[in-house]
Length: 110
Image 1 (cartoon, one colour):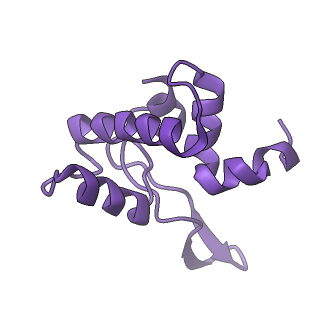
Image 2 (cartoon, rainbow, N blue to C red; image 1 turned 60 degrees about the vertical axis):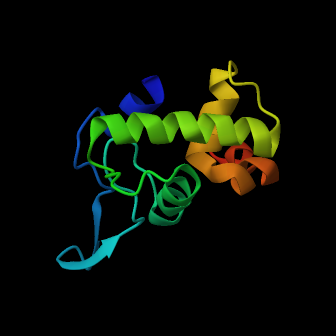
């Protein structure tokens, strides 16, 4: 649940901030992440396909927490990260499985 808090502060309709051109013309969002889990559309689609949870919604708490559990399980399978290694699990969640493998988090400040 700490990952969910970090991603959305438990807001059901959380989305990345809008970006603007010349500070006034909206150009869209940096990502299509949405909901409690801030799941991106392709990953959410993978979750639905693999779990058969066809009625799942990113803004439904039960579905979002189930998605996050699925993601932790998949991270264990894809990148051999222990389900108990909260730090590495979060890095996988934030960077994606490929980003984690490439070490993209190592190039970021903070």
